[in-house]
Image 1 (tube, rainbow, N blue to C red):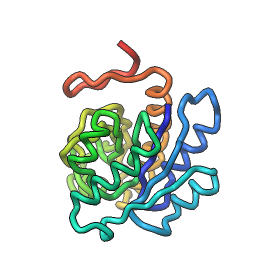
Image 2 (image 1 turned 90 degrees about the horizontal axis):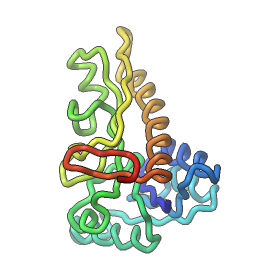
Image 3 (image 1 turned 180 degrees about the horizontal axis):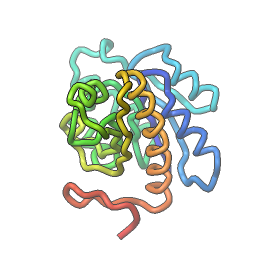
Length: 201
């Protein structure tokens, strides 16, 4: 399975996928890594692994719609079977979803549908939940609203800060992402309304 990974930051999830894909039995290959900004560590990780990279910055385009189309064009050049948003801090739009909807995955540091948006760990702490976690989902037009592929629970400790909780969520998130993408690559997946089933029908 050919995978394009989109990134914005340090690329720890990307590195986990690159490490897993180094084993031929994993069933997937990262064929390109794209970013919405220059100079991020994730791009260096990709280059060290010999993976082609590209950057499409929002500020280089007159409108968000033009950027969305340019991003979709750049991804399409690498003919992916699956697109993974790994710490990609931009929302993709209609032009992107028209081409890659149903085969674009993202992670969220909470148990969806709880605590959508960028403050998942902080919102979980503020609310006082005893268990939070991470979600892998199929990207749609909403914010963290897509059909759920997989989830992992992470207990909230009494002495947790946002940082300590988020770090433990990130560890669970990496494992969930690697396991789920590998299964999708080897077994396929089917989206049936809100339900995602791994394996071919």
